Amino acid sequence: MLLLLLGACSGSPPESLGVHGGRLAPCPTSPNCVSSQASDAAHRVEPLPLTGSPQQTRARLLAILANEPRARLVAQDGKYLRAEFTSRVLRFIDDVEFLVGEQAVDVRSASRLGHADFGVNRERVEHLRRRLGEQP
Image (cartoon, rainbow, N blue to C red; front, side, top):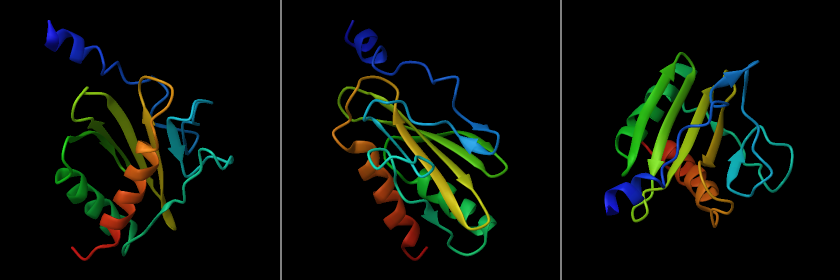
């Protein structure tokens, strides 16, 4: 019964995920999403910097995601990557997307369920930014 309840916290991935017209999906109005493509301060984060070429940055992101606790890469297609991050206790899933461009990496991190995330998605993006800036 406990496993059933914990599984219910994960939800299904939104159909809007992915790249549409060269952009990641916009954040909903709820405060549980951040995106480098958002125009409002509540949802906006800076894009991630390139570390070398776009291809080198993509490879670095893949290596970082492979070593992040409770992260699982679920999609990669050219310049697009998507990972699922699962919370430790209640097993909530956040979808984190990357779109590697020629100048920077656009990023979007959003909770699947709930309204507020207590800053978890913003902190995750900043954590990934720090990891990306570290020497490999």
